[in-house]
Amino acid sequence: MKVGVPKETAPGERRVALVPEVVSRLSSSGFQILVERGAGEQATFSDAEYAEAGATLVDAIFGRAEIVAKVQKPSPEEVARMRPGDVLVAFLQPLTDKEGIERLSRQGVVAFAMESIPRITRAQPMDALSSQATVAGYKATLLAAEYLPKFFPMLTTAAGTVPPAKVLVLGAGVAGLQAIATARRLGAVVSGFDVRPVVKEQVESLGATFLDLGIRGEETAGGYAAELTPEQQAAQQAELERRLPGFDVVITTAAVPGRPAPKLIPASAVEAMRRGSVIVDVAAETGGNCELTRPGEITVEHGVTLVGLVNLPSTMPTHASQLYARNVAALLQHLAPGGELALDWSDEITAGACVAGKKEATA
Image (cartoon, rainbow, N blue to C red):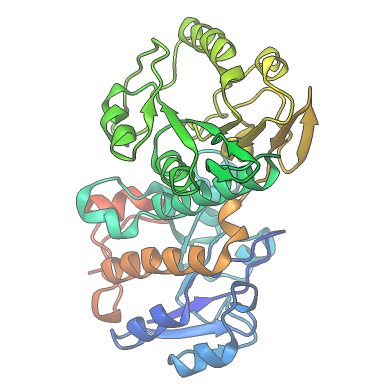
């Protein structure tokens, strides 16, 4: 089968769906890879590298490839160029972009959303949410270190000793745990909080202290924290407001799939923090965990810098693309073993990831 990799057209998106290393592997597994010229340039992968890996460079992908692999969802114009029966693999936002999913269905496209892959053991190599969250957690910590007007590590100098920065990470999922690990490597004193008591051991295994706010929540089947009740949210905000002034940096990563990000930090808590403190809101893309976050912007409120940048993985496009490409390749090899499409709708991964298109057995 022909797998096409178009150039991403979403504003600010620098990643590419497949990288030369993965193209080479797929080419030897029965796939023919078409890559739009310039598709990997912003992720530091040249056309020459793709050609050397066995890809065919073309000027247009849509209408030429039976499978299209993207990072971001296609634009309406791109969908219009797809043929009925074409397969699409990308982040498609099925819980929040109903119109986009309906557009794909009307076009007859069989669409697989990377964020809908079941979180089961055998699907781990396809888990793009986790791979990209790893990048986001790492970059969030670097942004915190950049905007904090202090050192992260303790330093002993001829002029005296400088104490280490104190960092709090809210949310101990993949992004949060990576943020904890990175902040520890940078020498900060780190605390982590999550409403799921089950992650306490993971936080402490990274050398951080688990911050107990007295709030306990449930874990969903997908491993996320279940949404708190209004009473629990109010109690959590009040306790955070009391604790936050003791930290130099707060990195927030809490998310509920398909819902706006839970508001953890009210404006009053920001006002109570020390001047020069930094909040990096990894959840900015879905509204932010802080009441004062402005998605896509870096602002200063009450002397506190709020970093609300979105799509953090795209700011590290080389490794983000490498990780994502491996996820995509694992899914492609599952859907089309040996390079031939064989959709088994009784399979949990195939059925679970499909968000548009007739679910009829083709093998």
